[in-house]
Image 1 (cartoon, rainbow, N blue to C red):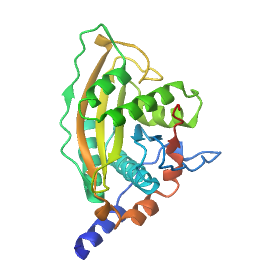
Image 2: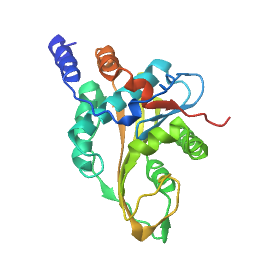
Image 3: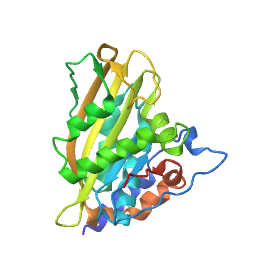
Length: 255
């Protein structure tokens, strides 16, 4: 292992600026998320959902949640996530790569729908299904059902809604992960942003008229290399501080 490279990754993390919204400044601090590895699990992590097939270790789940959250908060500092979205994603990718993710460039395409209406959760599932395994897709479907059924005043909904959309635009990610034969986390990631003619709450689950919204997407498989991430794990934890608690919430999946 290249010690100079480890040092440079550590310095990169320590020099990151993070944009912290009012979600982390709460009169009642949120409970820390709990991590289980025997069953399928899922979380809201800022403006994203992250789903895990049973067998992904508790440590790996925490690593994925922490690294993707750090990348999002760092990108939020550099760019407006709704109006400078593709620049935001380029910076998000840069951070992830420095933490040990093997990731291709985000190449966005506009999603087209023949129907007169669109639901973003259904469209996103259709996009991710092209690359997710059967088990990964199942747990992602359960994740979206759990989020849709959550109390509108819950931490899960509050975190996702406030970080995933502002005004008449949105920027959110849906991902589902398992481990590969080498024990690394392999993730199907759907990255999305949209422009609409109006703001709507529960934007992922309501029905939009097709002409009122433009949806853009990028879908790929990405890999977290454990050997690399282990060298910066504590640096990420230190950089996040309480944000790892205030921006992350468990989703209760149906049995």
